[in-house]
Amino acid sequence: MKFFIDTAEVEEIKNAVEFGIIDGVTTNPSLIAKSGRKFEDVINEIVKIVDGPISGEIKATTTNCDDIIKEAEEISKINKNMVVKIPMTPDGIKAINVLSKKNIKTNVTLIFTATQALIAAKAGATYVSPFIGRLDDISTRGMELIEEIATIFRNYDFKTEIIAASIRNPLHVVDCAMLGADIATIPYKVLMQLMSHPLTDIGIEKFKKDYLNSNK
Ligand code: G3P
Image (cartoon, rainbow, N blue to C red; front, side):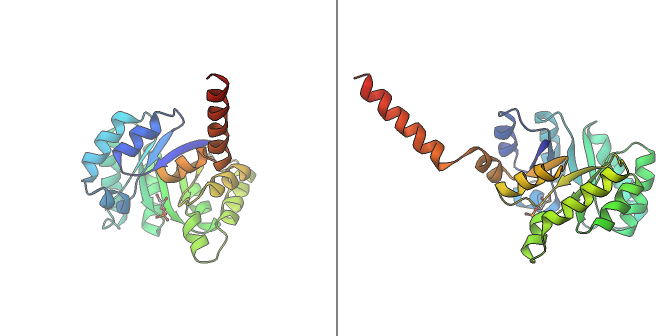
């Protein structure tokens, strides 16, 4: 299972990379806006830190097929690792069909149903990004979507990889791993939560106390 980090905060990426477990990065317009920086500036720094797939999304205002293709070509030229993130729309799908023939890597985002994922895979998307957390938020089991997509892609041997996105907690990561999502894109906070347990902290404290007592 691959881990991507879902952030546009360069410091978070630098810290996460030090663990040696980060295979790629995903960003989106909201994350870039939150960073308070320009898309190009953030991406140009990320490509120097991570040698793996880096998703950069087209402008939220780019909606027509020809414009999506044009912008995707520009994004793909930034670096060999760039993956163009494109929202799941009919125009987006038409563009992905063209881009896949040009060997431009794409990540279809805002996937909320198995049919959307199937269409994206048939159009030649490199990745699909089902949003688990946002489904959970509206009382729909996000993990069932991961299970459906994983089954469909396995049944027909689609090469499109599943990036489980909108991950909100460590259990999301565990469930995705159990179901065979290829990738989890994880916010920095959740990445740190994956490593910690109160019993580990208590155990470390106890070992320290016992060690110091026996070495007085
Ligand atoms: O990158 C897309 C995604 O992970 C968004 O997450 O928490 O805004 O639903 P969230």
